Amino acid sequence: MTDSRISDSDDWTLAVDRAELTRTTLTAAPAPTLGPGEALLRPSRVGLTANNVTYALLGDAFGYWRFFPAEPAGLDAEWGLVPLWGFADVVGSTIDGVEVGQRVYGYLPPSGLLRVRPNRVDERGFRDGSAHRAELPSPYNVYALTTGDSAYERDREDLLVLYRPLFFTSFMLADELADRQFGGASTLVFSSASSKTAYGTAYLLCDQDVRVVGLTSPGNIDFTRSLGCYDEVVPYGGIGELDPAAATGYVDFAGSDRARAEVRERLGSSLRFDTVVGMSHQAPDSMAGEVFFAPNQMRKRSQDWGRDGLDAKFAEAWQGFAAAVEGWVDVRIGHGPEALRAAWLEVLAGHTPPRTGHVIVF
Image 1 (tube, one colour):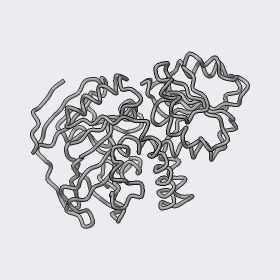
Image 2 (cartoon, helix red, strand yellow; image 1 turned 90 degrees about the horizontal axis):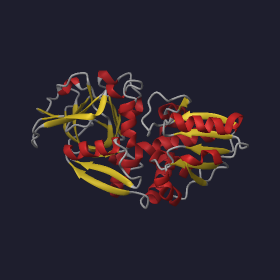
Image 3 (cartoon, helix red, strand yellow; image 1 turned 90 degrees about the vertical axis):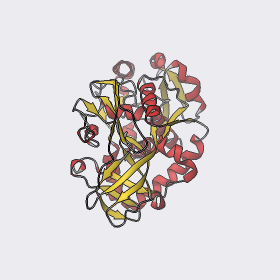
Image 4 (cartoon, one colour; image 1 turned 45 degrees about the vertical axis):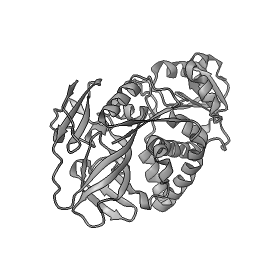
């Protein structure tokens, strides 16, 4: 671990060793100078969950390290910047339509400042058109103005930074599962059922004609059952109790080889599909089933419903979920880059209780 003293006037960057994620470095640098057509964002409120760990674990395979390269921060290629979701304020701009004082929601680096090159600017926000992000999935390049975002609620910013990216995955996953009629399955089994993405998906499927069973660790059984969005919750040791006669789809939010092997052995030919969504158990080589990637379903629905239609459907779903999830999470507020580092190490180690949500304010 290396450190540089950070002052309020500095830009700062918290990086992790791409090969050893527990190793971190906090560096300082002068604020960047803006050129024509650029804007400067100051991250102000971000969330940190197991989803961010997945970004790091899949950083090479899915290109997550490419969004915020370490080299401009003066770091060698061994270091990576783990993407975060949250709110930022525009603190500098040389482009019409992006004004100092505006507040946006989007994909942010673990840094004090972010220089972007806005394009496709409208009343809803803009996209970062920086060259290094041109070939990366476009949903991650969108910065939504709070004034033009139908899902934004000022008094729920903490819930938005913790849940919005996860719930968007849940929203698209639930939609895809229903769209393909659950692959012929009458039962869905979710691993890592206490994770936010898993129970967000289960919440959205409560009114669907499918039974949802949650698998979780023994210590999370009571919490997961208390959510009320699973038809049944069983510990991983209870996989042998799954009904081998029921046509079943396995939705893997954990990335656990062992759990997947046990599910396959138990269900045999009754297993209709096996989809990997996340890797809360941090096993990047275990992705044996098909992989769900939310932007793919988003593109499909953008064509089917139009962008306005997709935004409206998501906002409606979010407002219902937010009202429920307020009773499911205890928000823990941290301040500054050191709090971000502490939260990262805690979540990475798997020591964060399922009810706890880390929000970092800068």
